[in-house]
Every structure is written in structure tokens, then in C-alpha cells.
Image 1 (cartoon, rainbow, N blue to C red):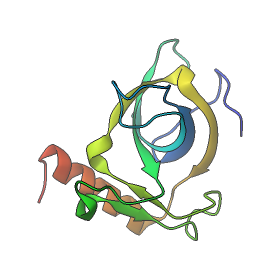
Image 2 (tube, one colour):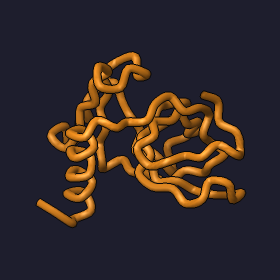
Image 3 (tube, rainbow, N blue to C red):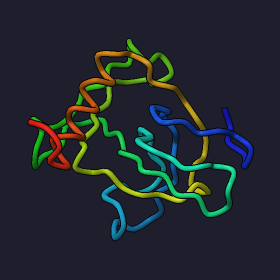
Length: 124
């Protein structure tokens, strides 16, 4: 689904973002899928979202912190992906290209919430 300014983006959406050509603000570069952690009202111009880019391979620095997202639980994703909560980043709404899925698999969402909590120091 293509995104326009009226499209409502919700937490747990997986969206293709254009992260740009440099890695100064984010570890991601180019067009990548990302998991939406939080978002304010997306209809307001200049809105920013907290997202975590998804990668095909586990991270090299801290692979045990990665959350494995299987394509079987989210059929719109064509291959298995890894989410590293250490890569959480803020991105502008206008960089969203299209929504590819909404993750609603309870066990995976719980894993993501626990991983983010560990990353920010809220839980063990």
C-alpha cells in the first residue's frame, strides 16, 4: 500500500523508508523496511517516527540482542529479517514510501518489546 499524507501509520507497522544516502543519522542507508515503534499524529506535517530498520543478516556487534522475524508469521515480508533494538532511530514521516505489513504475531511483539526494554534499561 502506497503512503500518502492521509495514511495512518500505527506502531507495529512495517514500512519501507528511504533513509537517504549517508549513515550520519541512522545506521540504515537507502530504502529499507523498518518496524514502527512509536508515532505521533501522522497527519501533522513534519511528524517524526521512532523506527528500527530490518536487516537480512544478524548484527555483527551484538547478534544476541537481535529479534528474528520470520516471513511465515508476516507473509508480506518476502524473507526472514532481523531487528536490532540498538538501531532505533527517529525518521521523518515524508521518508515513508509504502506500508508492507502490520506485525500482529503476539510472541514476536513480546520479544520486540522485551528487547527494546533491555536496550533502554527498563528491564532485564
